[in-house]
Image 1 (tube, rainbow, N blue to C red):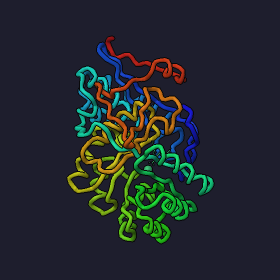
Image 2 (cartoon, helix red, strand yellow):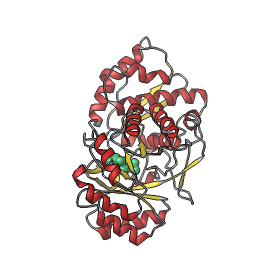
Image 3 (cartoon, rainbow, N blue to C red):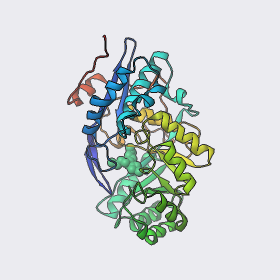
Amino acid sequence: MPLRSPFRTSFGVESERDVLLIRVVTPDADGWGECVAMSQPLYSSEYVDGAADVVRRFLIPRLLAAGELDPQQVAAVLEPVKGHRMAKAALELAVLDVWLRERGESLGAYLGAVRDRVPAGVSVGIMDTVPELLDVVRDFVGQGYVRVKLKIAPGWDVEPVRAVRERFGDDLLLQVDANAAYTLADATTLARLDAFDLLLIEQPLAEDDLRQHAELAKLLRTPVCLDESIESAKDAADAIALGACRIVNIKPGRVGGYLEARRIHDLCQAHGVAVWCGGMLETGLGRAANIALAALPGFSLPGDTSASDRYYAEDITEPFLLDADGCVAVPAGPGLGVEPVPDILAARTTSTEWRPAPNK
Ligand code: SMG
Ligand code: MG
């Protein structure tokens, strides 16, 4: 799917989104799961063709061999396969979606949502110039987004953040995301961001730098939030115990699924650690699920749960829209509550494969 404009981070530029969808078909319903792996293994070690390979060769055969199961059992069945959390999350979501549709229950209700709409933040990529950045931010603020996240990298940090804060004032909810681009040696530069009253700084250091994040957190007034470092509830527990973060970005794909995501939410809530829902440029399918998750009570900060048109001129589902308060509606229908528009899906599909269940 072509992106409306290229999205640049500290690790690369995305111009289109190659999406792996998983569809589970039963006699009574279809379920959908979206895999958030990118085309290249630059955000994390997973990438979309690798995810398709592991799903095809290792995950689906295990699931089919396990026979009848509830969605809560999927993760345990797939657990012997190491890693590949984004691939596992997509498969678990498809199973969960079909199971919920058969029961007429929404994903939000199943997960424990307490809101029917959630405030939407927007993630703004690295630009060539500060004036260009200010134009893009002005456009998003004008659309009604309640919080702005700026991607940063060495050489694109203090000046763009200062410019946005000065132009849009102290009331703008503002945060930054480094995607692991710094080291502890950059602590002095990062501490200069303290002047701009940011909600948080997301993943400043490498994913396996938990201890260094704890050191950095002592040197910054801005709260440290972890993204890439947190791949499980166990990781979240370790990070909290170490003092490596005060806030967690929960991305279901990164942690192996929506059920593990909920466990991280519960753990963080018990420890007084704020959470918010991250994004991976999802289509309407993954976006629907993220918005349902973001409606849980512990999601106290706006997520990267923007409207469909942030990335896509035409989404594959009915588009998610921003309302007058800068919120997106939590889908209320069974399962994800949205499905692909057949013609749009067909036009975007580059290949399909089917695995019949045994004895069918
Ligand atoms: O879906 O709005 C979105 C993307 C938000 O910035 C975003 N995601 O590290 O949080 C992050 C990035 C990862 C994807 S970058 C290609
Ligand atoms: Mg991030």
